[in-house]
Every structure is written in C-alpha cells, then in structure tokens.
Image: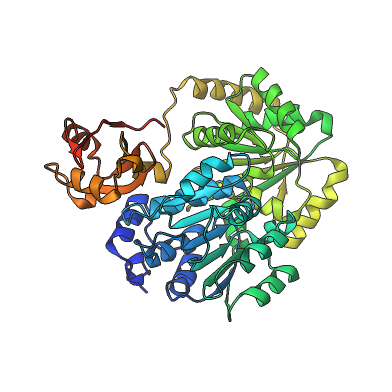
Length: 481
C-alpha cells in the first residue's frame, strides 16, 4: 500500500513548499489522523505522547485555513510554558512562511508593552501562556472577537500547573462559533469535564506511542547514593560519549550546583531554569539547537516543547516526581526517526518510584553496569579527541528554511502614512523581484520591517537605494536581531 503524503490533503502550494523545505516527507500517525478533521473545522480531542509530531498536526491545517486578509487574530494556542509557546510560534511561522502568516508569542517575564505593540499589527496566530494571554484580553490589547480556532496544548500539564481556571476564563471570552482542538498526553477526568463543557461533539483520536518509545529509546538506570552521583555521571559520560544531551535536575539549585561542577571539569555545558531572564533562556536554547555546547543541564522546563534535532542522550540526574514527567523528559531523544538513550540515576529510596514508572508504562528499564576503569580511561581519551574537533554548527529545520529570508528595516512608518501596499509596491518594482518574494510587512510608527524571501535580500537592498516610497526618502538596511 502506498504511503500517504502531504499532497493527499489538498494543501495549497505555499504550505506544501514550506513543508518540503522544512524536510517533512510523510505525515506521522497523529498528523495523518488529525489533519483531515481540522481542515474540516471539526473539534478534536487528541491523546498523544511527546515526539509524535502533534504541533504540525494542528499547525499545518490551521495555516491552510487562515484567511490572510483578516486583520484580527483568528487562532489562539494556549500552552503551559514559555519555551513551548516560543517553539509553537516558530513552527507556525515556518509552516506559514510562504503564505505570509504572522504569528506572535505572549508570555510572562517579557514586557507586556512590547507584546502590546506586536498585537497592534495584523496578527493571524497568537500562542500564549494562560496568565499573560488573559491579561492582554482584560486590558483590551488582544481582540478575540474573530478567533475561529482554539488549540489547548499539553492540557494535562496545564491542569497540573493550576492553569485550568485561567483557561476557562479565556474560553468564556471567545466566540461560541469556533473550532476547538485539545492535545494531551493523558486525559484525566478534569480534562474530560473541560471538553464536555467547551467542545462541540469532539472526535476522539488516540495515538498509541508507548511501544514506539520502548522501541526507539534504550532505557537504563543506575542505583547510586546521592553523594556519589557526580562521580558516576562522569563515568557514564566517558562510557556513552554523548553528542548532544539534556541532563535533568529536580530544582534550580540542583541545576546550578551541577553546572558548576561540570564547568570545573571542563565540560561544554549550559544551564536552563525558571530563575533565568527570559532573553537568556531563549539564547541558551538557540545555542543548544545549533550545537554550540554538548550538555544542557535543566529543570523540567526543557521536558516539554523542546524540539532539538539529534539529542543522543537524556540523563535524569534526579528522577522526576511525576510519572508523566519521566515520559516527557526521555521523549526529547529518539525523535524524527532516530534512536536514543535515556539514563536515570536513582537512590535506593527512589528505586520504588522508578519501578512504578516501569510498570505503569510497561517500559523495560535495564539495570546499568557501572563502567569499568578501562572503559572510563578509554572514553576519556576519545572524549578529549572529540573536544578538539572544531565545532560544526547544526541547522535546526526552521533555520534551514529561514536562512533564505532577509528581514529588512525601512526608515518610514505609520507617521509618514506608509501602508503595507506602498512598501510591497516599491519592492515589487525592483527588477528581479516579484510579489512572491515579499513576506510579512510589519509597520510601526516610525519604521517598518519586511521579510524578503527566496534569498533575494541583497537585490532588494540594492534596489531600494535612492528610492522613495509615496514620495518620501527612505533608508533601508538589514534589520538588527
């Protein structure tokens, strides 16, 4: 039987072009099951584990259905963490690049005023954490009258973090005539009650992935006293020689303590936890995605929504206290057809909990053998050799697509009565440029930004030299990041 591909969904050429350049070949199981329902505006409840491709399962059909000329937001995606909000925003922006879909993320720890300015533009998709999203709605920064699609992502985690009351408050303010899509790894009764209250005859879709996790990820545990953990971690690193790894700790203090020890040992590593400034957290994640360091030492904020290619090893330095967290953590490896290794360090008192996880998910978690002196010494030599090899940056799939996009700054905006059509017209008149090469145009009071596609940024910059827009002299240059 022929495998289904994205052409079978009758998607537009702009969406298919983005999927091709992003490296999507055939739909995953969750995408194959979900996309037709969302294209048909049918409510869905999707039970699916991490790493199944669920973000694209809702982003692809929603991007297809968006009405480009509508000025008010049409899509609201609610998600429990800032990292996941940023990841989903990037996915929507990449999939909707050639259709010129504008997506923004709103979350705490970033000035509300900056987000308010972005919300004043024509925005098609809002991805937000519940608290900040509700705050913008109450302050009338976010107009939800034209919301046609609501996505509730990681619903079980939303419930665990105490966000469900905020989610309900947001839903109560949305149009009744909308489609609602809920995604969750587990469906506890509180989530079912939410579905009964706010969804219209939803279609239930379940994608069993426990076996695929078992098949894709080799799971190993080591029983060790707390004070011997770091010594054992060193031995494991020298035995396993990870190319890229996330090491999970239970608390911010444990992350900071471990990162200090690892840096003193000369490991290529960086920390990630909720006590860091948001801009710093984003910078750390981007560097990790590019492969600029090997070990990301993190709390559970990296357990969901972190889509980094080719993570070879997940190490639970501290075992998580919730069964679902274990699955989400180890699901950062073994993605996109790859295999991975998940290693858990447990103290004798914690072993019972690991046993419960194994029974609950029917996982085979092997008892690891402590690396021998010979293995450690041999690994040390190989590790030193690897560390001398010059760093070759990794390109994340969205970066590959966005490498052909140039964001240009233009020194004219609303106060000079400049409109998107004026900028588009001036650029399209440049020889070698047509309308398909012009992406999202964002006009502020005193300046504007425009995305130039198809690697034609240099042509546009040269063509705008000495040009006027609506009779006004302008300056154009590559936008500062």
